[in-house]
Image (tube, rainbow, N blue to C red; front, top):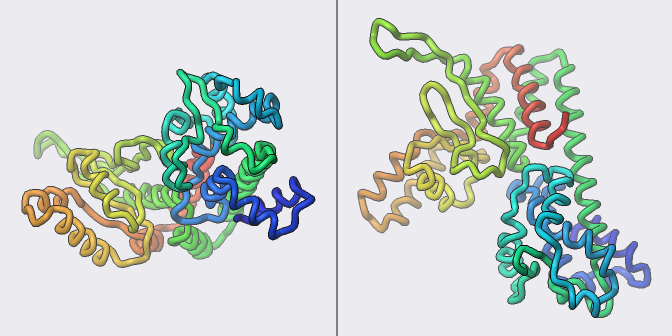
Length: 357
């Protein structure tokens, strides 16, 4: 149980001691699920913010607390809240402006059953209306909706504080006069514990400004070749449904996907999504890229069952592997003006991610 959640439980249940609070928490799959989804405030490298799932639950809890708190009999006759009401509410929350409806429709229920080992859905779906199952709203005789709401609200508050700290750090970096100090601090931000979307934004900023110094020659005939700098574009926000493409390069037409080492199945899935068009994988790891390539080749061989046509298809779809080591090396090659542009890009895309001015 995270400390801020324990503190809320102690505050909301003042008659209980620490041991009783732990026992109470252990009897609530809903509180345990929220706890499991809130690792992002600590910068856990494998935990995204999970706002869609959390907000889907919170949107129902928010209205429930005002209308059905401690009224179980009345709530049992309730048919659910209209989708448009819930969707408008969680789109109005911090970071919720671009969330989709997948969490309300299916994602929460599937994950909740798997993670919490429950047979009953958390969210009841009733012809476009949504309610939370009453079994998860009570621990004994205690209605936990207020506790759950305070937990989500504190989580949002902690995320806001974390985001504001990062933006303040970037603004301070821009004011530094030493290019070496700026480079060192950017380099420190891209480690294996970096939050997933922050790593994606910083890696994009480095690669965009590194590649722009490289030119290629394009034309429809030898006589009409034109020199063009490489340009890298971000396809959208992190966690977007981008079909396995995080960055796209012009004029070469290269695809880039940001990922982590842990799940090699996802690498193959990304290749499948783009019909085995070659992908450059930008990987949040300090392992040498040669080791990653060797392990990926071994995994492809295992999954192919020895079928050469499958092995060749996947191996040909890996254009390049870029790790933290390469990103740090590229950073060292850049001059002060380019390093400043990296900081401006990090600030710009992070604000865009958070819908901040």
